Amino acid sequence: MTHEEKLNAITADIREKLPRLMELKKGCLIREFDSKFPFEFLDIDESIIFAYDEVNGGVDVINKSNIQIIGKEPTILDCMEWAGIISEYSVNIDRHSFNLMGDFVNGVSGGSCEIDLSKPLLKENKELIDFLYELL
Image (cartoon, rainbow, N blue to C red):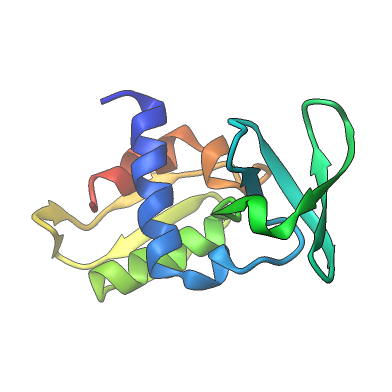
């Protein structure tokens, strides 16, 4: 399985288990039904949505009835909460290490994973993605 496939699988499960990541709030990713490019939600005024268009580098106005909510990008803290929910074991983070405490989770021995705390999003931490994918 590719790195991107692992990331997509973990992200989908995190968004399912943590519904707050799917709330239409600032920072939530959205997509117009007829587009493959996501926008970052900024604000809403009645039926009009203001969203940041990363491709064109500006603000777009979108009809609320024409969007699909993708969700927020999971952070390291979201990953810790998710791992605690799916494993029922304690999850700890220290300076640079993500630790899942417990004997076995889904047949995988509890262990640790070094992460780069200067990169707060899951998609920026390849080692964390590989580690969490084993918990699915």
